[in-house]
Amino acid sequence: MPLTIRPIDPVNRPFFAGEVSGIDLRERATPEQVAAIVEGMDKFAVLVFHDQQIDDAQQLAFSRNFGPLEIANSDVRRDEDRRLAPEVADISNLGQGNAIMSREDRRRLFGLGNMLWHSDSSFKPTPAKYSLLHARVLPKAGGNTEFADMRAAYDALDAEVKAEIKDCVCEHSQQYSRGVLGFDFTDEERLRNPAVPQRLVRLHPGSGRRSLFLSAHAGAIRGMPVPEARALLRDLTEHATQRQFVYAHQWRLGDLVMWDNRAMMHRARRYDPSEVRELHRTTVADDCPTLEQAA
Ligand code: OGA
Ligand code: MN
Figure 1 (spheres, protein in one colour):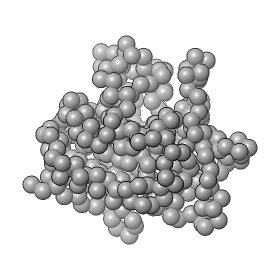
Figure 2 (cartoon, rainbow, N blue to C red):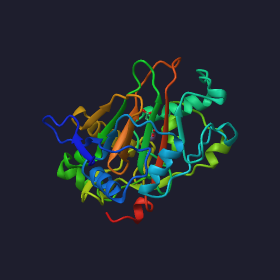
Figure 3 (cartoon, rainbow, N blue to C red):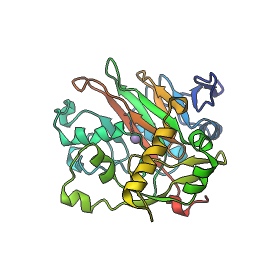
């Protein structure tokens, strides 16, 4: 069966989410399939693959078709309490022994940072290119993931704002995003996480379009007083996450959703913390820091 991509929800607005059919991710993808997916990612930026009964090894093998993977290290989930392989990010509310974490568990509270609009790993010198998230266990209600199109949001800015932000360089750190939620890092964790610079406006190579590189991790703009920078970032984020730029993914078991962090922000929505929600994420790293990329 040939691989096809059908736009999701294309009514009256530029679409950026596509539904892929004609591929079984348990099997090794052919070069033609990989090329069609990359092309689809450039056109859409979010692709949904339904009914994929894959395990971690199959998810890893599929993800590696798109480039080197990030190691999913976290400051608050120590190596000894990892449930999954180093390249698989544990997007769940489960701890050791697959028990639901308590409400006060630091690892759970840290994970709540995903509920703020962000781009994955923008706090790392080289941020993420693609993220691939696979649904293993879902709560009865809630827990959608929302995506906002940073290319359309950029296009819709006034010419004056585009000129104003053209050369801005932001400082990104998890201390900033977690701090917004009132999460406290220890001094040692703080030292391990210096802020990294990222361009605010980037050129998306696959589509030739510009995008706003916003993220909850952005807490300063070089050369600008901090309150002014945060007010501007907040203003841009409000603009970029208006409903016309957003696709809300309602998960079905076995969905794999792949998105381009260079062109999208995303966030998790609330669900009942006494129910299990378990997704596994693999992350393809970008080629280099954004300041080294063509702008
Ligand atoms: C992620 C993430 C959102 C969610 O996996 O990177 O932000 O809905 N997840 O769990
Ligand atoms: Mn994320």
